[in-house]
Image (cartoon, rainbow, N blue to C red; front, side, top):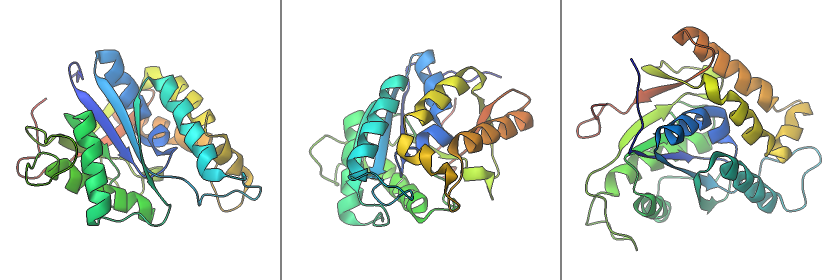
Length: 236
């Protein structure tokens, strides 16, 4: 069985500047190869994830890193500009994410699983779920017009697969090298691999891809679960 993303508009909504590289960049790359429009919405500035030798202006550094990574992928980039640790599903932030979705107009949204380990990931999950519904509601006013129908929503794998039961896998075997190049753009975070309180990102990403690939009978895969709610599921 093969899934085609042709003619779709796929938007990843993630908490931090390197989250898409870890969890869904291969799927975005495959979607683009199929002919889809792809985008990444990074909700947090990444201003709190400091190494033992932090950059002077970490938020600006990470902004440049995520732009470089998105350019490699050929993805349209959106920034929520919320501070790390301050992300929550509240009216102002929800409206901003709704506006991002109305500007990109996705048919499919990829978002953090609700059970992921990081509080910002879980907050981004709640915001993505709410905004991907209300972006099609004409009663919720933002600068851009409402979508005709809500986009489909897929929950992404958790970091290191903890507590996540996939419904399906996307074969990304041909895009692991691109994921690695994108992740290498995030030099401020890759450098934290030597810190005792952080994980070597490249090793973590490779292990996750191989693990999910082994489960799916391919070299590398990314795992997802659809948001199986009334009016949110789609036939593919």
